[in-house]
Structure formats: C-alpha cells, structure tokens
Length: 361
Image (tube, rainbow, N blue to C red):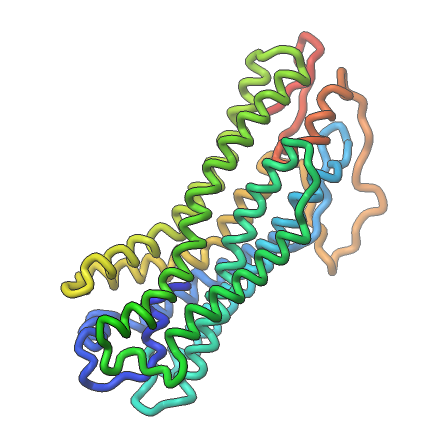
C-alpha cells in the first residue's frame, strides 16, 4: 500500500516516541503484512493478465480500429504501473515478515534504507497508475471529440510527475537523517510530514474528482454521436448508452473502492492530530493493505471487454492457430462499424434485429 502514515515508520525512532509506540502496540504487523502479501499477489496476477497480448474482434469479424489500440496502449501502461507497485508491496511485506516488525530498530540503518527505498518504489508506481487512470479518461474524451491522442504527453506526465512528487514528498520527510520522529514540533510537522501527505493525496483526489466529470462529458458526447450516426434514439441506442454509463461508473467505483480508505485515513490524522483514534486508524490500515494492491486485479476486470467471445488472450508459450477469425457480413454494417471507429470503449457484440438494424448487447 502507499500511505504517508506508514512511510513515517521508516524513520529512526526512540523509545520516547509516545504516539508512534502507542499506535504500534495496537497494530498487528504480522497480520498486516499477511494481508499485503495476499492482496499484492492478486494484484500481480491481475496486472500480468492485463498485460498479456490479445486479439480483439467482433462477431462480424471486424478488427477494432486505431482508436481501440489507443485505449489498449494506455491500459497496458496502467497495468505495468500496477504490476511494479504490487511487486514492491509484495517484496516489502516479505522482508517485514522476516524481520518481525515494520519499524526499524534503533540505530538499524540498513532497515531504514530498505524501508525508504521500498516506500519510494511503491509510491512512485502508484502515483503513475493514478495518472494513467486519468489519462485514459482524458483520451476517451479526445476520441469522442475526434482529436488526436496526447500519448507522448501521457508518458511525460505519468513518469515525470510521479518522480517529482515522490522525490519532493519523501525527500522532505527523510532527509537529511531520517529522524522525522525526533523532537517533532509543529513547524517540523508542517514542513517535513505534511508535504508528503499532499504529494500523495493531491493526485489521488484529482483523479477522484476529474474522472467522473470527464466520463460524464464523454457520455454526453457519445449520446450525440450515437444519435447522429443512426438518425434515431430508440431502445437500441438507449441500451447502448446505458451500457457505456455502467462501464464508466464501474471504472470510477473501482478507483474509489481502492483509494477512499487512504483519504479517510489522512483526514482523520490531520483533523484529530492531538487525539488520534488509534484503533480506528489501524483498522483502516488493514483495509488499505487489502484494497490498494487489488487495484491491479479490479482494473483487469473493468478495462477488459465484458462480453464473451470478443477477445482472445494470446499466451506467449502456446502455439496459436493460423486462422483465428472468420469474416461475416451483417446488415447495415457500415453504419454500426462507424461506432467502432470512434468509440474505444464501445466493446459489445452486435446482433441483427427484426427491422434490419444492427444492435448491441
């Protein structure tokens, strides 16, 4: 998981760190690390599944166009970020289980260094995954506006912003001596600990606010495209638009499910700083340990095509058949295929209705 509170445990501490030691007495680190191992394993498997190459096609045999490839490229990089983040959580949890504790022992410099590096690794790739999530929503809006992709800008934003935020937040927290618990005054708290919270929660909250708005605008654009393309707005078009709304809503709900506990944790800490609800906080940490790495697994479910037979996973070590797809002609296929040309998330199977129009399900 990526949380600024847990990251402060990497600092050197003394036996007089009353608040920290009080929290650790209520915190079952072995159970926490076991939860992290379980959820990160599922996250790794989900990310690997998402990265696997696949063939995408419709019942009519028409291969999906360049716009579908655009969305697929972003999904792959999102999965790569999830994979490395989950891998970092997995390795860190293994080491912490072996050491029997999360907090480094007094004067244990090697544990501090490992904790700092692993925390930076996990935070960097999780921030990158949030930015790729935002980029996917932005690109969806661009597709529906018939604009070119900003793929190079997506890469710059995902990797550079993540590096700047991680370096700034953790640098202020740990440098020069990783003594964020020693002689902590109000000014020390504001200048060393608060920036790391801001560096973590601002991009997270940005995605939570921006993505629903972007998908709302995309849905409106899609309604206009569907209506203009078919010249009508019947149950067929209404069902299609409802399916897209469900897809967008599910993507948003998954992100909220995985990261809302982190925001609640941060709000509790900074609003109840002098009277922390220790038991409540530790329970939230267990939730974060479970939901954060599961983002990779959930993403592999919500970003894939939901209907059966619309895509085929290509397993690298399995020999593929020479001919996988057959072409079929469907009524009014030129009109329906125009949706594929413009809508990368429009990934449903087509069927012919009794009035000759191709419909979606």
